[in-house]
Image (cartoon, chains in turn blue, brown, green, red):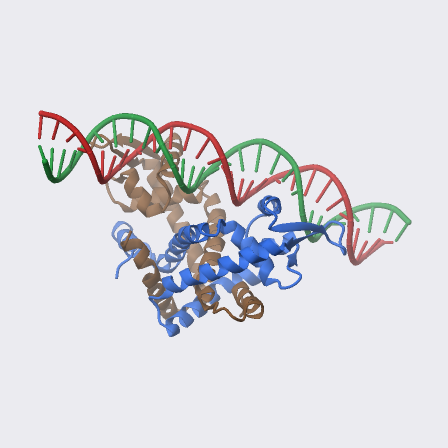
Length: 164
Length: 164
DNA sequence: CCACGGTCTCTCGACGTCAAGACACTTGAA
DNA sequence: TTCAAGTGTCTTGACGTCGAGAGACCGTGG
């Protein structure tokens, strides 16, 4: 089965035979697949009246375990957005009563963001829905292939996640 | 080497041992890696005074081969953006004299977007830079591993690229 | 005890994207 | 020929993100 990247690579080989475009076979697929996933997630979350960005923040807090609170800075590294964006996100989630902002008792510059009961429910419900959808997408692959894929991707993400 | 997704999955297994979160091992890595790549591309293109979205459009036209022209609709499917976004992109690229808009001789609703000589140069220069950067990122993997990874990713992208 | 660089969060303005709809044109069937 | 449905592009308004910088606070070294 051919995909858009196969066509893209073939076109480059025709137009620029002097270049080695092999890296695109991997990384263009990563970028394009991520865009497809974004769209699929958006429609999946719509059932729960949730935007993808809301899911990202709520589930980061949910994963932290009781008492379900993290600093904005910790949320930054998990969600890969800038600080201005995170401030905005927390504002909107607080307005919807899904999270609340508390002063950090150990650092008066800091703030802690805590999940409300309502926010926790939303996180739990939408996670189940997301996993169902992702299982369907991965249905193409055998269990072993999924394992291989995860391992290869880890080798690429690890440098980004550990060095900076 | 551990990455952020390993930590994420471990946290879910602790907090929600009732759920099978294995799909995240693959798809969360895809999404996160794509964000890292976006950032890396942004800084790489800055040397050429080019934004990632400009690169996407210019190289789509470049790949088309002489006379380097495509309809906005064809550009949509290649870049995975909406039509309103593409109109806006073409406007800005035209203002920078990197592309020009021509009436489609075969369809009076239609428009053709053509690369200017300047636009073609930009595309060629920035592609070489991108490939260098991507090769560095993929340096972690052997040639054979890159091939496996590309093949597995193709299985996931093909349904998105062919069905809709 | 003070000073200073580092850290944390927030503010602000500019920008790019999206979704939905408007409009003009095309196509195929009656 | 005519008309209705389909197609291709553009317009509009709302929204989310980014980057740079400000302000408050921490902590180490002198």
